[in-house]
Image (cartoon, rainbow, N blue to C red; front, top):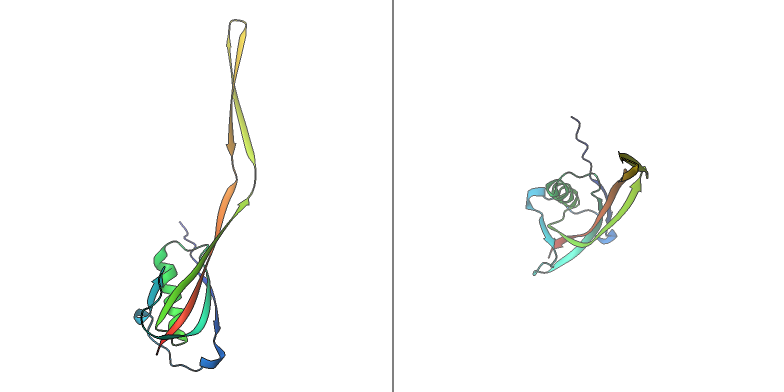
Length: 130
């Protein structure tokens, strides 16, 4: 069995804070749905493509690792975008005929064989405490 798990990231750094010392990923705090209540500056913006991620833990691990590389103390989820695409669109129809005397009854089953793939992008601010 093969498990494909990939979380791609794109980080844009604030040009005023290009040379901050890295932090440890385990020290980076995730804020999802609320903002930190202590003073901070935004040192970067991150877009994370979580389409092929198997767990939320993989997403958090990748996000905190990338934030720590540029000196972040926390990441704030600002938006989550989900688009669904359809691959291999096809339908299959199967039927069954039943004959009873001179009466024919036809039953048809239609199956949708389309593969639906959610494309998930998560947007973050990378912040540094003041």
